[in-house]
Image (cartoon, rainbow, N blue to C red; front, top):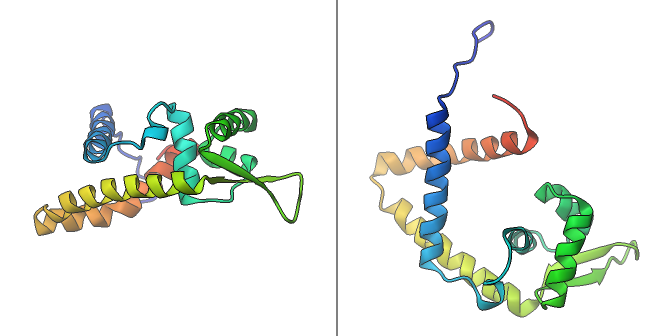
Length: 157
């Protein structure tokens, strides 16, 4: 409403949301073991692997922008993951100065299987909720996506 000051969100509610998200991620991880070749990866390396699973063919600059990291940091991650045989670099056909990134095929299969196991476990838990709660959760998904975007952009709501 115009002219109405926004209500302050209690810090405890924000803390509860972060705790719930962390608990969901931990429970999903317990349902599926991380593939052996990913077991020793840092969180930044793992985030790059997840990004390349979702969006293969990204350049270092694209990946840096999407992850909110400096390009030189992503270059270091790519070098480390390439040396480990996890990431492959291909020259862009239109601009030979640009490398396109992807997961090595065998790694991609294992990462997809790992993701699928976590998604199936989470879908089962969602399906087990009472109907009204399940619907409220599903209706809130776009809102959670918008919240993630606002947080990443540094916006305040």
